[in-house]
Image (cartoon, rainbow, N blue to C red; front, side, top):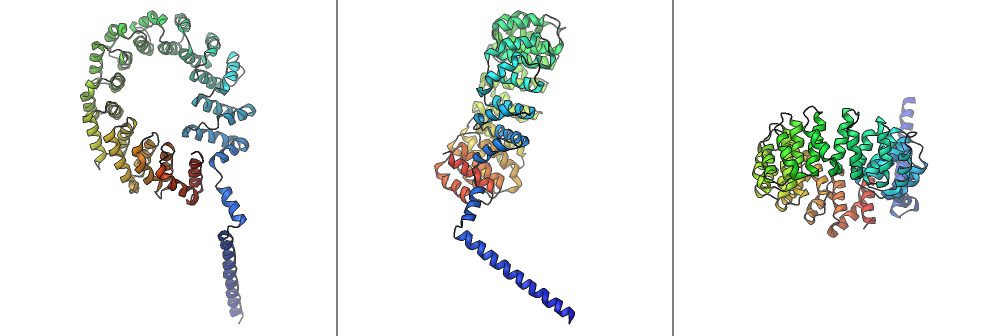
Length: 464
């Protein structure tokens, strides 16, 4: 009897539990169905716009949260929060947070830190090394001419911590007068690394005042190889035609690094002599020289070299050279090259990395037949989860450009049940807000199971 009582009581408890669960579920469903205030408020809070959430993070978030958010903003190319971060920077105590904000401002060339930067560069020695170096880069990226005298003072102080950064920045924002300063400095007692930095900076300045010094450095076989390399490139930038004869002699060097930079020096030389060197460089035994030659051919738009580029694309042993040839051929819209690339996209056995590289070039230069082929490939991957990585890679490329031909891909990606694919579809829509797809975006914003996806779609609608 005792055991039966225990069993009966247990059964009674089970019945009660089921009934309570049923009643609670019914009440909850009724509240939701009638649009109860509590349920509506929860949904509203959950679907707060991404912009609002990010503003709250900037205002009230922990240092690590703010730093991570800025990393995300940089990755997304999102400049919306530049003004808000100015107040955050002013009150920040953490070097890590300050440095991250400087990096963000540098990325988007935001002038909000100009006066602060000049103040620090005037007397940088009591500041954190990382912060000063970032501010020097900020001055360089924004080409703040007023920073030049402070940079010269830093260089003259022989402070090794800031020397290379200051030289690079002055090479970007300086003048012929600064070129004279560099040439005089070069003749002094400098380390090899310091001389290399100056040679690179003079190459950026492209000032005629440094011509004689750079020619001497390039031709001096006793000089450090890297100094000679940077000097060779520099003279090609300063006097392209006159540098030709000097660079031609240097191209006979057995050092592939020097030959590579000789090719860089020929990049702006359009003479027959230069074309001859570039043609030879495309067949050089060292891949760095071939790679540089491909870039020079593309820069000069030497379409006569297309056959050589196609040969390299088909046969080169280095993937980097192949990819560079695909890019050059796409930039030329070369018919034979495009046909070959499309054939690779259609081959099942070809690697996905190769296909993604080809697709990137065809989309970048808006090659009509190529865009059609990449679109067909992307639509095929949407239904094949074994090709997810290729699908993601292609989607990122589509999201970079405005193109009416991307509409079908955008729709297919947004209709995918895969969260990452759908998110990429929204990224494509952000760049290409197709009117016909707005209802689909609105559906995602209202009904998608994933709250982040709803917020992302809502943010896109809010900006329209």
